[in-house]
Image 1 (cartoon, helix red, strand yellow):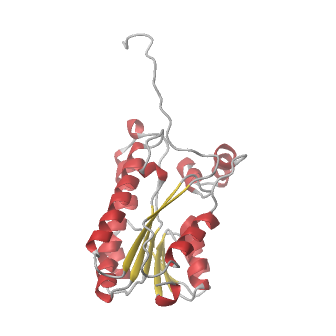
Image 2 (image 1 turned 90 degrees about the vertical axis):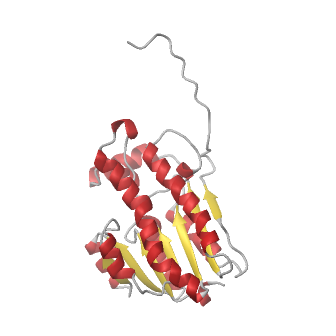
Amino acid sequence: MTFSDYRVAVVTGATSGVGRGAIDLFLQRGLTVHALARDEARLATLAEKGVITHALDVRDTAALTSALDGLEADIVLNSAGVSRAGNILSSSAEDLDDLIDVNLTAVMQILRLVYPGMVARDRGHVLNISSIAGHYNFFGHTAYHATKAAVHQLSRQLRNDALGKRVRVTELSPGRIETEIFSRNLGGTPETDASAWAEFYEGFESLTVEDIVSAIEYAVDAPAHVNIGLIELMPTFQVPGGLTFDRRTQDAE
């Protein structure tokens, strides 16, 4: 089962990052693409390429239902995601709601709408973008790590739900990718674009969107009897893990 077996793809987070890059791949492979995102101007550019666009917030379950209910999707790429600066010690209630609603709840709601059809048709491929933050504990936003760990387990569980059907699930778990996510954490302006690039990317050999898209192509193009369940991608100069042992020199007041 390769691209030639599929007709329709659904992509969230479609106007930037991995979602945007994957759309070009899917179009090149002859698929009809449904793109879900909030940025109407960028969606208009995709529409010019023949993409079917849906301007919506993935946190809006009613909007997702209107866009996807009954759609015979062969590939679903759950690429939409948010992060936050800081960690749970400094989080607002809105921070936690956004992280859970976008990174986890929306993924499950989308799958609730399209996954049963894949199973019924005995054909389909789910591609979930998680993160190494879901597999390793390191300094970062705790709730982000928790949502990505949930996506990891969700991806595993989906395979059980479709046992005996030719439906495949691939989790792509990347390290640092050159995307807009760090700039968005800082405010999402041209100024934060520059500062985020200088802090997080300048001088580093990070992953690129093309690297992740190549992994997507590899997973989908695998023979029908092969399910590539997890692809962990990291820059060669980035490693996970490490142990921190903090020495407390005096009692806290």
